[in-house]
Image (tube, rainbow, N blue to C red):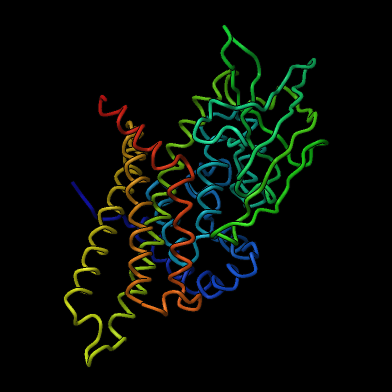
Length: 379
């Protein structure tokens, strides 16, 4: 058992940490305030070869592993969670389905654009009445000659405003009264396809979160992603990988909150001593450090299992569940250590709490993760 990063993984970690500290972190407060999408940051990440990090070099990727993806997501999220979720969704929700289920022609056209940063990756799954119950999909794709005609709506879709093409799930028929759900690639400039970006969110304000509306959107049947009727299975596989990304995001936010709290505790004096000299604060910080270490190890284990081609659904659910919950706990504790200053935006820790909350909801709520784990342990 070897817990050391490989030389390549360590190189990526050093590079992305420097980049995140120098280029991403300085504008995080302002982006949170103005909701400005960090497009320039992603142009730089594209030049660094990060936009297609875990995908084949044949399609413009870098051929790295899932652990490297987790490292990059953590470091970006440590500096700015809006940047972190944009990157995580780009890879795990946008690029991954194409990589896993696309034809060679689809990969060459669409995955290459994602890897080169010419298009952001996005995935249309959630609907107004189909969140945790993704099987409740109502969007339809009816056959009309050589085409599908799509009608319906999706909500809370990350990156869609900056995607040229995205995969969506839709009902393509009924089999014995059961929905046949398929995944279909839809260019965002197709007539009848409308993207609405007007959500007011609690956090992750600089990330792009949209509603998709399909009004008789016509796409050729060759845009079917994978086999017809396999859409439900495909998005379950996609979400497994996405949960590693959410876990890595949570570790990054938790680490940022801990770093702020530790530095503040060493500087702030009360009753003639620094906060870090009080045992109550020491115990708080010790628990925070321990939980971050556990969460990171869980993320890395799930990523390693995925890279080894072994089952990782349970571990992905566990790392996502644990990391997201300790991120909320640690961000909340960081505010408490800061006292009144923690409630002020300039000290940043309140942003970590707002950003972390989504991680208990997205890619399957905490309750859904417990359902997944319970099923896989034989309950």
